[in-house]
Length: 301
Image (cartoon, one colour):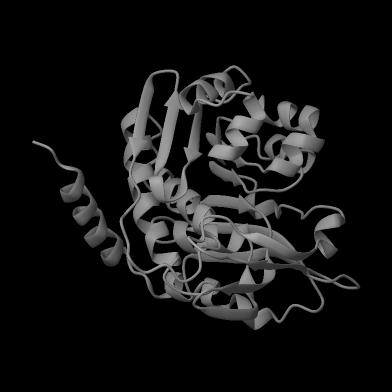
């Protein structure tokens, strides 16, 4: 079953203790799509400016990713982000951000994509997310992401969006900001009162937490010793999680648990290189191998 994602397509410039990369392909929709395509076909919807070199999307088109929903908008410039990681590289310092085309009207979902059954609304203005959710009325599962900017400045719009989706993926700081609760289990419970059936709270190197009406689950991160660039790690986690759910067309508590483990493992690859380099080389067999290793690590019987 095809999985549709809407989100940003960016030109990133990143500096870490291990080096730097300038004007490389990034954005939430890109990382998400590459990870999800390891499990299911992906339909990508987004918009870039006329300064964007179309060949940058070749690594996506060579996978099971339909990029026909990507609009190259004349007279506009592509979203650009410049960031820096230091120390333990747990958080990025934004040096510069140029919204450019993202500050304009949203992308258009092609008619051929309207029958998508599984949808992920990657981080963007919640009003745009709500519009996509309402447009894609045939979807069986709609999950969204968000960020501090929308929680602080567009709360009412975000709350309307949360009433229209089945799941929410966000990091621990965002969960606390959204709910006002410091305890993450409590924050997850509070999110459920806002509309979603489940919340997945990302905790970086400490894994992720699932809170739903019938489940509570902690997924560990895959322990890796090689962290080059954490950019896109959260989007990669979400992509693998949603790709697994779409491939199996099952969204119950055990499917969500397994999906989160697949997300943890797939995210462990993206941090091992700058931009999408590692993700373009990963195979389903690589993911399966690390998944077996992770399951062995956490076994206690």
